[in-house]
Image (cartoon, rainbow, N blue to C red; front, side):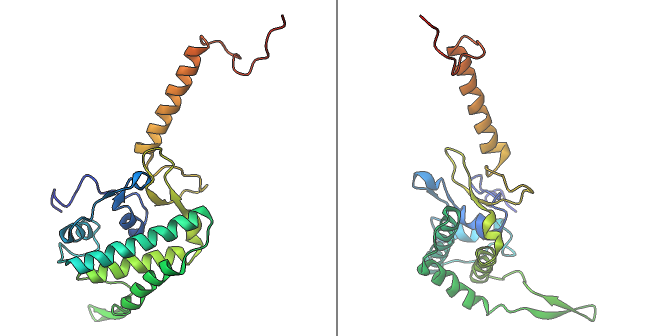
Length: 211
């Protein structure tokens, strides 16, 4: 993979291809930073995500459809996290890609004369990769895995991810990033509070002295 394909703005903590795809729009809490600005960007991201065997061609029309799919997945994700019903329009977009995914059915291959069942093959083009992303999103949204969908609690993040932790208590997209920043912020706030009270224990919430 080239340095260009390892774009520093790409993030891979979503836990699933469809969630990583949603995260190609960063910082959604403040309007977002778009990583798929032109067709070549989508081809580059698909290669970096290893959803295609290399850089593939993308035109303006397919980029527009890809962004539409991404936003439909994200709106469904946000609804699930908020405990709200999903809109039919979002499901219709995902379902339209699931119908297209039928062009890539499971099949039997031969490996040294023995049959091998292939459920998914590496798509040869961007269209096939987007079909795979839609299937991945449907598998999450249409199963109990949706209860693991999360939005990072970082004050300046809002990244989406799957919580695969045993206790399902993960709050941050990355402990090395948002998690450490949150801990550092809590430490600074605690230090400031100690400084205001002169470091005296029990000052907080203490009863007023009798006059």
